[in-house]
Each structure stands twice: as C-alpha cells, then as structure tokens.
Amino acid sequence: MSAQTIHRPTLREEFRLELRERALDGAASAVLEHGWERVRLAELARQTGLSRATLHRQFGGRIGLGQALLAREAQRMLAETADALRQAPTWDAGVRAAVGTTLRAAKDRPLLAAVLEAHHGDTSLLPLLTTQSGPIIVEARRMLTRYLREHHPRQSPSYLADVADTLVRATLSHLATPDLEELAADRLHRLATHLLPSPSSRATPRPRLPG
Image 1 (cartoon, helix red, strand yellow):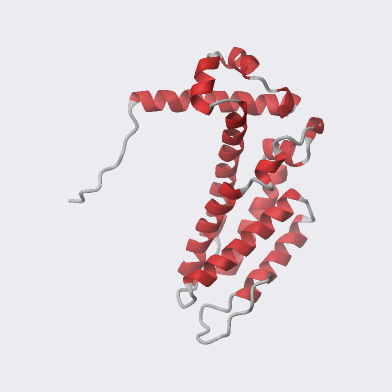
Image 2: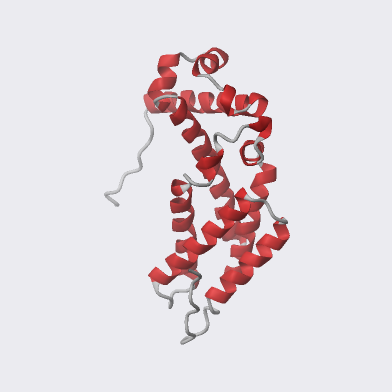
C-alpha cells in the first residue's frame, strides 16, 4: 500500500475556495461590463455579498485581485491547451493544435478578449499577459517541455526546454498582438518541426535556436 495519501480539502478550505470563486466571478463580470479601472473592492463586496475584509484576506487588495483573476483565466486556457496536446495523433500535430487553441482563446474567452482588445479603453490588466506574464510562461513551458520529452526521448532535456520556451513565448506574442490565427499556427508549427527532427531520427544535428 502506498504511503502517499491523497489530500482532501477540509470544509473550511472548500468554503474559502467557494468565496474566492464567487469574488473572481464577480470581478470578471465587472471587467466585462465596465473595464478593470472601474472595479472597486467596496462595490465588488456589495455585489457578491462578501465583506471587504474577506476580499482583502483572499487577495491582499485590488492588485492581488487582478492577478488572481488573470491567473485563473490562464489556468483555464492552459487546461484546454493540455487537452489539445493529449488528443493529437502526432507530436507536431499536438504542437499545432496547442498553438491554435491558445490563439483562439483570445476570441473564445470573453475576459481574455476584453483584456487583450482593451475593451472600454482599459489596458491596465494587459501587462499581466505581456511584460508581467512570467508565471504563465513558466507553467506553459513546463507543460510543453514534458510533452516534448515524451515524444523526443533522445533529445537533450535542456534543448527541449529551450524549444518549449521559444514556442511558448512566440505563441504569447501572437496572442498579445493578434495575427491571422491559421497563419500564426502554421508559422509556429513550421518552427517546431525545424527545431526538432523526427523522433525516429538518430543523429540529426540540432538546429540553432533563434537569438
């Protein structure tokens, strides 16, 4: 019998998570309706039935709320991307599907669209998806590196991590500065197949990464 135990959330933890989700749902609705600049904790507390003290305990303030809101949206986007990787018949088809899924998120997910397209003339949350997108990059790079290692076991792990980093950053760049979705997906698919030989190849020299 394994010594590893599965952690089951306590009632207190479940309650805190429920409050957090209610606050984030309320904040997302407010962003879609008015833009982030007009989101205030006092108004959010009134609309969600939560106290301002609860919101401060959960998020530490308005900045923390915005970070949590975009982090949740990014997690949902990454979950869809992971599904695209798992369902693909080949590794390169998986990369293309993952890129396409990510780029479609800008249209399919209203909150992401509102932030990326600066609805209501509001760009205050945009840096969390561009210049301050480090946490998203780390999570996406880890996921893609693991996927590439499964399909390219003969390649150096550090090289695969570099390839994953290049593809993730290029995809996020396209997400932040929209291009034709199919064109961008094709371009990044070509980049992936250029950087990685077929898994059946044995001694193919590795291409140089850009930069």
